[in-house]
Length: 373
Image 1 (cartoon, rainbow, N blue to C red):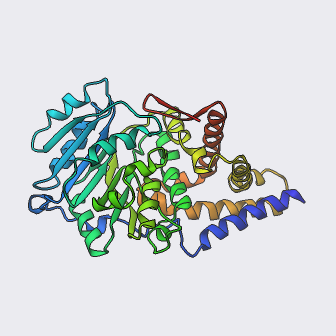
Image 2 (tube, helix red, strand yellow; image 1 turned 120 degrees about the vertical axis):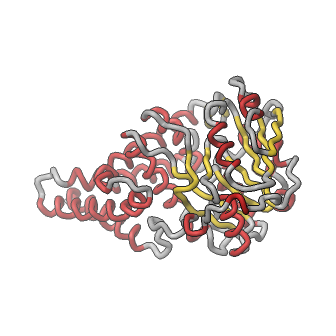
Image 3 (cartoon, rainbow, N blue to C red; image 1 turned 120 degrees about the horizontal axis):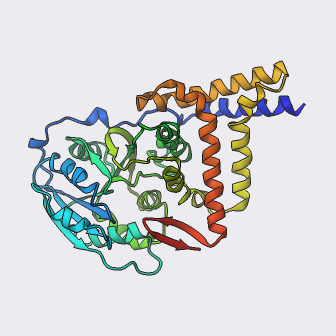
C-alpha cells in the first residue's frame, strides 16, 4: 500500500505547486523588458554604488568595467573589508569612475561581515539612491538606468534583481538553476512584490533603494547580525510602509565561478539552516517533504507495481514541468529537468550539512570568517 501512497503524495504535492495562485515557478518579473542600451545619455548623478569587497582583486576589474559603461556622473564607494590580496590597490586603478576606496575597520561583535562593510559605505552616501552591489556582479550596459526607471514608474522604494549565476560546468548546470527555482519557491516574487508586509524578499547581489530608507529602518544596524541580509533588509523596508520589487535578469550576472560541487555546497550550506530558523522540527519536516517530492517519483518506476510506476512517472513529469520555465529562461537544455530529483536531494544534503555545522557550534562560515552560535 505504501508503494502507492508515496508516489500519489508526490504527485499531489507537485500538482499543488503547479496550481498555486501566485505561480512561483513562472518568470513573471523580468528586468530585460526595461533595458535600453544608451549609457552615454544616462544621468546617474543621483546614484551612489556601494560595493563591499573582501579579497576580490581577481573579480573587481570586471565588475568596475560594468559600472563604467552605465552612464555619466555615477559615484562609487568601495569598502575594502580587511582584504589581504590587494583589493584596494586594484580598485584604485579603475579608470573612468568617480571611485572612493574606504579602508574597512575590523568587524565589531554582533555584525555580519558584509553588512558591516556596507554600513561603512552607506554612511558616506549623499545621493537620493544607493545601489548595493556585490563585488562579483556584472551589470550589462543600461541596467542601472533601467532599475531607476522601474523604481520611479512603479513607485518602488527598493528594487532588486536576482543575478544569473554561472551555468557552464556540470555542477553549475545541475544546481544553479535549481538554486534560483528554490529561492522563488521560498520567496515567491509575486507575493513579495504585493502589498502585504508579511512577504518580502530581495536579491542581495544587486539592490537599488532610496537612501532615506536607511534612517527609516534604523540603519543597517537594525539587521546587523542577519546572515540572509537581503531578505532581512527587504522585510524592514516593507514594514516601514515602502513598496519593493524583486525580479530576475540575464543582464545582471554573477562572475564568480563555482568550479565544483564543494564550492556550491559551501555557498548553500552557509545559510540553509538559517532559512529554517535553526528549528530541528522544521528540518525534519522539510526532509520528509523533500524525500517524498524528489526521490520517490523515479524510484517508483522500479517497484514492480504498474500503478506505482504510473503515479511516479506523472509526479516526475509534473516536477519537470514546474522546473522547465527556469531552465528555458536561462537557456539551459531542458534535459536537465530529468535530473531535478538529483538536484533536490543534493540540496537536502546541503541543508543537513548546514544543520550539523550549527550543532557543532558554527552558525555560518564564509569569506574566511566563522560565525559562532
